[in-house]
Image (cartoon, rainbow, N blue to C red; front, side, top):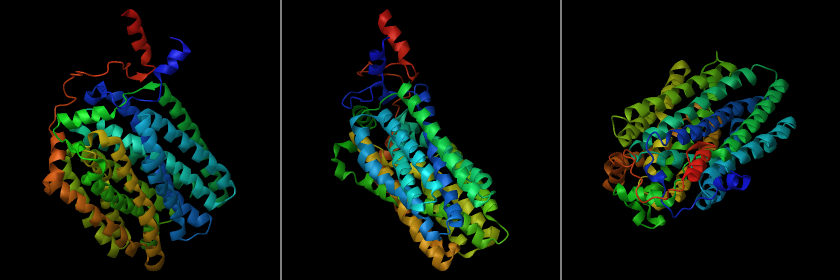
Length: 469
């Protein structure tokens, strides 16, 4: 196979009006692309966990207050709607998932490289700009990866799939604070800043290598025609309505905004909470305790995925989100290990909420799936809005009392969980996908057969098959 043929088979533009085998991928056929894309979930979990640790680190080394340090979260999550509703969503709709993955990884790598001179100059504003570029990259990855995991494989198991993949995101959030406790807080300020530089250089090298692996890999491109087929087969038929009448989608995006804002606010000020309420804890110990809390978060995703095998995902979602409200409330008035324990349990129950909102919000969107996923991911902008509010409350009234802010946003997010369980217009499309047989039998009738073998360099097999025929 010549070089031109090699590049042709790796074209980054997918034909959105053609149905492919991707609409009915079986569990076995979807295994490789899911494993590859799950690496991305670890990446942004690590980046997000690193951000929470750097929040406290920069308070120490650059002598800034809590509300100003939240500029990191504002830059990071403020970039998400720019990506999910702008450039990344455009690439997703006009080219496809693989092109969006590569674009997001390249932006991530560029942002990590820009961070190097900003850290060297001790410029907080410059580092926020680097984080903004990284946020655009990760926003691009989330715009494509969340819907891809949801639709890649049998629809019946969509919530289980995305929660298992997101569990690796949770593992990333555990690794980052542990790294921070040994690399940032265990040294003097000058050495710690140098260590931050090396961490971001290593990230840049890794993501550029991963972008090249995605270029070489042959993964299914799930088209609008595929999603319209799934919506018809499951009788959800929500895509019969114009995009602007997809009210369930916009309610899911609102819930995502409120939930994500609350989650990020708690994690961002967890170290401050421990320091303020537990005098015996230093920054390094508080960072390790954050890692433990994030470990509970990751464990919750595995536990939630297991429960969804036996209980409808919408019911698990309702219980978990309600428990977030129940357990964060005591952390406002309790102090010491008791208050911190309440936050530990809150993080455990937060675990499945984000991915389950994504999966339920995309149910039955059909040809609107790619566009709709951008709106749900844009809800991540809550992570730019709620932490600054929490930071202002923490500066004026203490970190413990500031937990009232995420509590209010959890209550607002609960409105979607209630609707998807008790309002038929929400509940029926969700349940239709939970009982469908699509992807459980390998039919592939009436599809475009010009699809190579799935995997790295998998098209070599397809090329040989064409020669033999």
